[in-house]
View 1 (cartoon, rainbow, N blue to C red):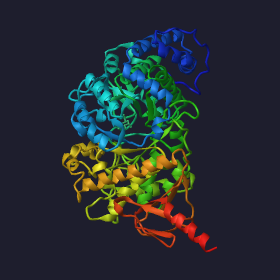
View 2: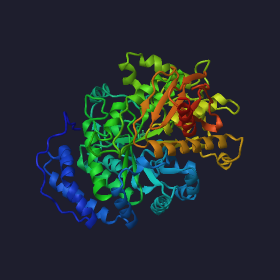
View 3: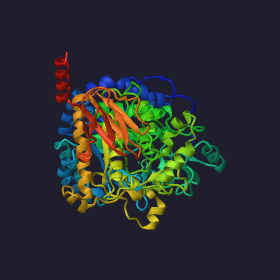
View 4: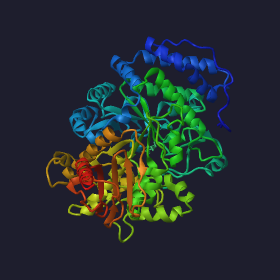
Length: 633
Ligand code: GLC
């Protein structure tokens, strides 16, 4: 295995312009982007003798795919090119679910479009649905074929029809592109095991155990209990295969330009089937540099920018969403630092900080994290969320906590143990994820993490509080399937729970709850109306404060996060006890979920424990006050 040292190689020779057979529309885009594509790719692969031939071959294949792009998608390309900030202004939410658990199969998802519309969904993230490994497959993240659909979920035609139907209803389909690895039963891996030397170059393998140990010394482990280490011995290859995640997920070798080409073409193929947003799975891991932790390497960004340029040429309507569950300042780099890269990224640090604040009863962590996050350029959008199909990964906060001089293990160990119900005062029903070490991660649905119980108002307020952060901060809020109905953890066979506790928060959609979403007095109705209420508040924010930076209010009690966006103020009480907040400046009208709005008395309001208030200027009261002050003069 060869490994690059240092930064990407400088551009040595930019190949003579090739003329791939793009359609007329794409030809002009190619003319605009060809140089930047060549430069990016030559910085990775330009030292190879066959670089120019490789590039010409790649562009030819790209052009054939581009020629196959449907008319409706070409129209979408044109619309989006004229309106690049469309997502930042969109009032809808993102919604994430597994195809089978949400609706059985792709055709079933189509039938659920009315529900998605009623719920205000703008971006639908369907978790992996491509052909996946037989047996264990990490919820589909072990892909066996990027060009076919998993048995039982439907066909490529179903996907195309679903994409079109969603588009017709103003919903964009988001799908995963698993760049880092393939399943060990993917044809590339099978061919490698049969001795195909070209396919062996698709993977990263090491001959000797001592070499493995030297690399491992710098690496973390993603699944320390279930899949310890980052390498797996393969008897057919008689070598150690780099497997960052499970032993059946073989990391791809992006030093091989063929790997880049294949994955770029797989993406474009999916874009032609109607995928509008790519969730770039495990983005930080795709480039390895021995002697480092092999995450967030500069080449990762070169690859993502090159993929962006490829899409700009052949499918410009599409967006990339970075799944980079790393420290805050590292996540930011995936937006491209002034160059085009990903348009979206999960706000993983803010999500984890929200849970820390909730358990600590102090707004400090969430405020510091949010305040340290700069405003993004207009076409970039945070994905703000409370939960997703993965565990809460605590290490994203490590650097921030240590930079303050605090003890990361002590602080987050306490938070995690509380979320795992391991201290006496705890209300949570989460469980440790992937490791006996509580600090590794936390699994559980929102409902169980906040200890939701009917009749317990505090627990409902906690539910509303964690989602309030996702709706109040700039970005698109992502609702994880089941949270709109207050669904709890799945009942799991013990073995499955022991294998991977993330299955606990991957239940099937509760049909009975769905049917009750408008029936007063039910959990489903309360959760559903909460999410609809947040959407109303967010629509107003977008109407009246879009593009405005968030400011954080000073002088508030320790438990309270106060933020200002334009004319709106949002006060969130992370402590379990009531807090008084003085409103020194003007007349306000306070809103809160479920008519729970605190009353404003003598220019102050009393937030209940875990309570919240969204304040808008009270125009009538302001006019009346101004009039009476004029009259008294
Ligand atoms: C991403 C997915 C996660 C999966 C991992 C490996 O982090 O969200 O579920 O286990 O990638 O593919």
